[in-house]
Length: 280
Image 1 (cartoon, rainbow, N blue to C red):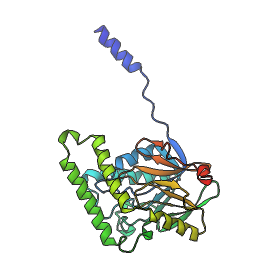
Image 2: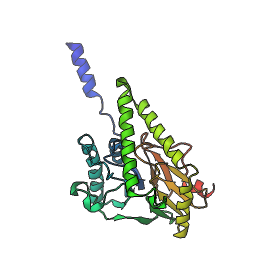
Image 3: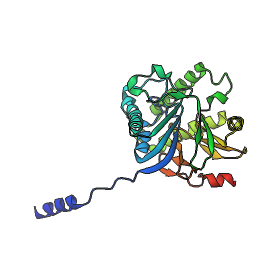
Image 4: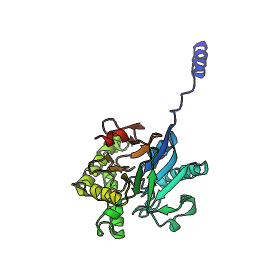
């Protein structure tokens, strides 16, 4: 009995585990959450948002997914993400919402899932160092056939069906395996990269930024994170929260960083600060 009591006292005397410190950013750029879709990871999005706060949240399109209404299994997690953003807005954070090709018409979104700001097609973001970036989802630079509403919906259902097949086909003991999930994500990422072979969309978006007389472009849509200035101006792509789980961060000096949402840390060799881009 004495040993049991000693064990209880030692456990009770241990300090409570410390929470991870909240990281602070001047701006966070997130795109392609696809809340409601089969492959969406609202749980990771929420965890990231809880551990990373920003003065400005730039939602760069495809935050909701019109083609797949929230199911009972995903509704709570998706609603929690929307509620977190609404709460940060009420606390004084700036919320900017750019509509993407998967986003539903704002007037059709139920009031409980509606973001408290007007949806826009594009904005110009002024960084802390004075640089100006065009922010767009990116789908308007696709060929007309590819960006058609019908093809967008077909793509959503095909990907959802493929993910369901993968889930059914995997051995029961691997259902919760992150390794298997990573293989599925890698396969989808490889298909996506093949569809955009040559990265012509990057050049088109940089050309659009040049027409707008700004210092670069920040976009989403293509589910391929990027941060470089190969075409003369900065090109930054947020990535997505279906396969890559990435976003962009602006620090208080105006530098942009790619963030790995799974690890809650910055990409190592893949990180380019604003100063490195300027002198690449």
